[in-house]
Length: 636
Ligand code: PRX
Image (cartoon, rainbow, N blue to C red; front, side, top):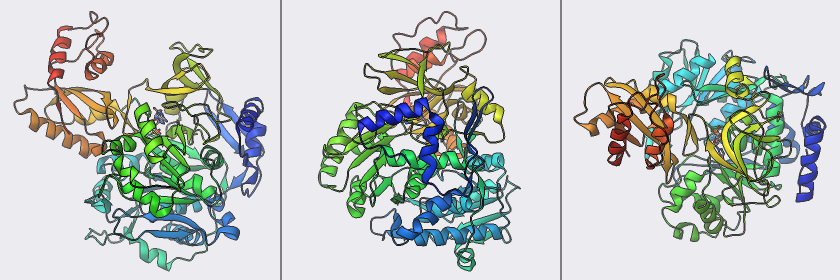
């Protein structure tokens, strides 16, 4: 493992990784437990995308997360679970306990007939069993596909069908703030469309009344109790699939990003240790849900690979009060906090008196991830949470990169508000113009691309390699295109400007505009819709939908409510439009293409610089839309 301790070492590591990437990544991988060493550090080709790290090696990621720590850390806390309600007791699991429970659940899965390579869907709340589920899959070589438990039954069944999952792991219910969510009910509904699923392992967490399908449904606690805690780890080839995680893109259907065993493992620990400058014995808290990539890499694998203590929080930042985060930090003496700008902005709106009440002396590093952090939020986080004495890292990366790509290394490489800063060693970036020509020098803007693989990079998109090629590797020759625009300033620091494709980032969650439009169009009176993002004070971007209906809408409030219900049902509440404007037409070119540029400008409230609209089939619709936008009603 290469640990960078100061700026000179960062520069040396960066040059080493640039000049001899294979030697560098070979060195980083040395300290893991390998059941067989690799024959080749890297085999790659961006044209016909192939990215194979540590080819020929064999390992199991859970041996590296759990077994290898047991001699020194059997009694150290691996996981602290902070429940939804502050009145309930937190639960801790030591590395030995986690190892034992993962082994038992691994054996329970094997008993159900789950074998290496089978896909297992995990749809659970943020309880310790969620981490156990994921690790149990990895233990036996099953490919986990975690679906965020805020997605609807319809989204869940789409993902189960796409992955052809054999088993679903779930719970009876979930708690979120003052709400109880009937999780198993959603699974039952989803499974009506999923004949491939033979078993459901259900953790009866809340003791809620649930529907039980004899023969299919199994009681988690009973199965765990009956299983042996000796679960030999499946021998995994370095390039064997570790997990699938669905993410939204420009086209309608979310795609299953596939990560492999060894590369992802090496990159998770390397980035965890270096970006947070993790120190032995520290308590690390990543507030992301395991349903997203941040929850995979920095709630689960990264910290456990490094032998850290990871906090799993079930609740939300604002319940029962806006000091919940600060309480958790004090309660568990959290040293490193990793959260999203949306959470910071939402807490900011309650005033700094809340964090001011808590000294939070344990905090050493603050992290931000998932969306651009505006300067005001950066400073608030730094001053009121970090008391101006903590390092603050704004880390840019993606589901597809598996781990952080552009980020300060806490306290080592420079921080600049609203900038992600410098790339991690091994990350070779470039900015290109729309034709794919490299934009050299500093003080420039362009489309952000990557020219050399990193070990965390995706392998494929599940079941559709051509889609992977087209989405990431075909826009610019021999480059991976991130979909983001970026600025490189006079010092060479990167600032992410946001997506340049039809993806919007709502509260740090990626949402494909086509996906939301498809859902809206399912409403019986909707003929067509166009969705764009617009600046939102808390969420970063809000969802603005322009909707054409069959007949003029008389009761607009009712129609909006119905459309929101359809979107919630088809995707989930996170995709609910923030604004819905009924329009008679959309700005279309003669070839029928919607000019989203115009809609984006209108949604941003900037209708003065729409550019040339004479090429539209009917330029008069623009005037009507502008007028309508002035009275567009928030749906919130
Ligand atoms: O647009 C970028 C934004 O989130 C996208 C990736 O989303 P997802 O795959 O869901 O992963 C999120 C967590 C890693 C990126 O293409 N993004 C992520 N981090 C940042 C960011 N935008 C600005 N600053 C960041 N730190």
